[in-house]
Length: 180
Ligand code: IMP
Ligand code: MG
Image (tube, rainbow, N blue to C red; front, side, top):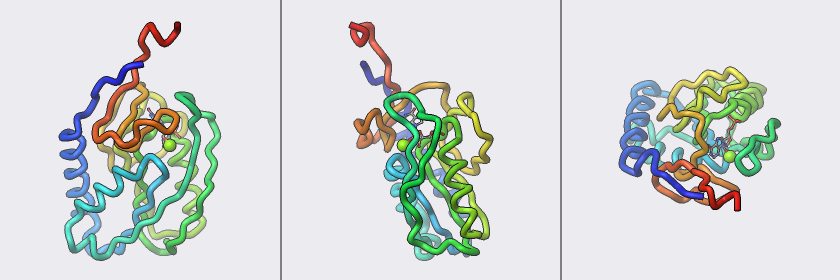
């Protein structure tokens, strides 16, 4: 197995800055609640929050939900929500953040779960999007990069728990030795 850099740490940071700028102009005077999907969203979401201008940063609250669908490199096809929100989102604007959207099931499951609290709106944000893998149509409002059907790690993304701490995004490539 080998890792090939797809987006360098500098490229990732530049794009996250751009997204933070977009959020800053879209959520002026909004009491925004940012909800991250564990574990993958954490580095992206924390960087995003730290890049918000003071005016918005003062009003932001954040929380996490936990949803898991992957085992190794294959999605299990069902998504379970194993952590509920501790922040009240009723009548508030929610920004739901994940590191990557693949089949769309995770994001769709969490959007549906959050709707029962009747937020004013739910917008979605992901660093990486694999549109060719989509099984469930789910709107994405803020997207860092579109990528092909590749399995990636780093900046929150993992392969069986490893590689989440990388500051860049890399593609996992199988080498001929893997089969031996
Ligand atoms: P979906 O539910 O199929 O959209 O998958 C979304 C979740 O699967 C993400 O939150 C990730 O945890 C995981 N995932 C999807 N693609 C990748 C990948 O390329 N690398 C690592 N994790 C992935
Ligand atoms: Mg995950």
